Length: 119
View 1 (spheres, rainbow, N blue to C red):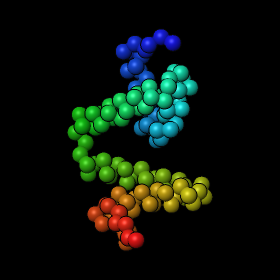
View 2 (cartoon, rainbow, N blue to C red; view 1 turned 180 degrees about the vertical axis):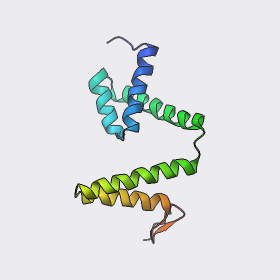
View 3 (tube, rainbow, N blue to C red; view 1 turned 135 degrees about the horizontal axis):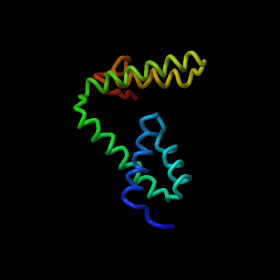
View 4 (cartoon, rainbow, N blue to C red; view 1 turned 180 degrees about the horizontal axis):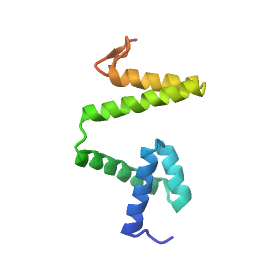
């Protein structure tokens, strides 16, 4: 198989970045890369890593601070929780609430956004 050009690689990174921003997890992105472009696991993960780096760079260049990102994340998690409740999906609802608890430090076992493990 021929090696991808720089332009093709940039396009692939862009496609993976879009999938990530649409909420796809790394396993889904890897499966997409392997199916679509016939890549090995290692090659797929390299492109996913580059996509995440591009997302980070885009956020930094846009000047979005941590509070804005937290507000955006909370908004999306609340929307996801609402959708899960509407669809009667308790697993997804609990997951969204658990993530909100972890991020915001709302629960009994949370402190400033970090979970405290008790044994």
